[in-house]
Length: 512
View 1: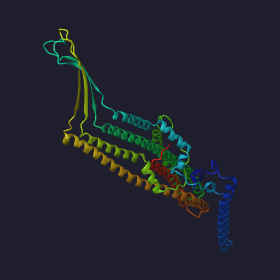
View 2: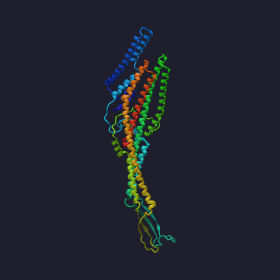
View 3: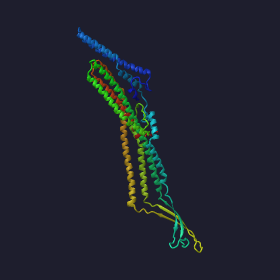
View 4: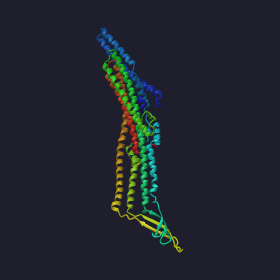
């Protein structure tokens, strides 16, 4: 069931793209108009019968006859001159009924949000310009470049020098063991250690990649929330301005009745107070709007000098949400959970690597020694040296064991964080699904039952006030009730859409 807000809030005569067929609107308006006309005629007949009865009891009294004629004229005028607000509400209600239609349930939790081209364009803009997203992207690239070096061998060591040179003489041909040497050495880690180091780096990069996806989803959620908050502020502003105009009209009616002695000064003061309250509400909304716009501009990555976008009028679509299906989707697709799983695997590999530290590495060294001929010209052969060495991992209690314990503790920490996040996501999903369902039901109830009834109450109260059948406070309370219900309607719509955006974040739905 799609519930467009525009039909509920726009005054009569405004045009919308989804305007129902002309014949449907005409039939609905004529039906409602007939109902109002019948109500007005019944009211006038009742008033006229009452006056005729009073006239029969007091026939002959010119004063009473004059009063009866004046009341009959007032009743006729009240029936002919329908309030402008009543006509507007009749037209608006007719358009709302004609435009309400059933749509197939969306496959995604926010198909209606994604279908909004302005919001889609804003999300694409943020993916390209938001500096936080770009920073996360560069961090992902950096993490990927750390994988290959983690599994590489240490740099070989090249050495050169003179060995066995006597202190008493500097020439290289006096002692048999004096030579010029050049050598090369390489450390070979214990088998399996290089692969584990590379696995640890790969899992780190995987976790960072999931972190990038989580950042993108979080920024998109922030854009949607700010977008809907700004749209809510603009719609409330329109409602306040519309209600202010209606109250000003009531104020003029009260002033006119007070001037001819049919109303009281208290009615005028009450109307003035309500108008002032609407002005104060407009000032409050004007203070809130720049804050929301600044947040939307920030998440979009725009320059502060660029104006914020104007949201489209909010719309609602009935969503069929399966909590268990959403939960399974979240557990398998939420980047935050996948990143924690990568960290668990990473710390498992780190623990294995710490166990490998109990085994020695191997150092291989080979050198070449060049010797000069002797002083008498006798030739001396050059020499080659090759050695192997291992480190001795003997400091186990104060070096190796603490490193292994650290890796195991980090693994357990990641496992507990993963379980905590699973529980939190499940709880949040339950809350947001309930919010979506209840917000839609509330909006539908306001749209189809509460608001039409409240608006008819205002029409009836206004017609009755014109003929002194109700006091001004009743009329004023009826209009303020309609205003509060309209605020509740747009608030429910915003809550519905923001809850869907939160579900997208919880389930790991990608904006692409």
